[in-house]
Length: 136
Image (cartoon, rainbow, N blue to C red; front, side, top):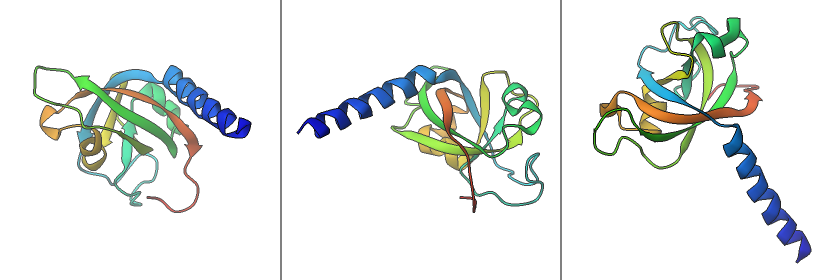
């Protein structure tokens, strides 16, 4: 019984730590996935993103995974967000992105937001480091 309570407390604490480390920003989307700054012409799947220059950090962000959740729209459109979150792999640089912006693949954007919105507000955080092994 005590172990079950401890597990529940740890799960709640983990969620609070994750929320505390999340950064606010904006997300857009793109549709051409190769070539990329990190992997040239190698296809890395569709749950991918391009990082702003600061986050990209001369390629140090390549392969890192970020968990992203839509928090709202940037204009007065109806229902810009979908429920849930998406985890993406950084595969590219978005040279024109603002310091708090990620450019998601259209598939990743569509999991958390309505593509008709074009730009959404997000919370994002590093999610477990780098992908290892095959891409997804």
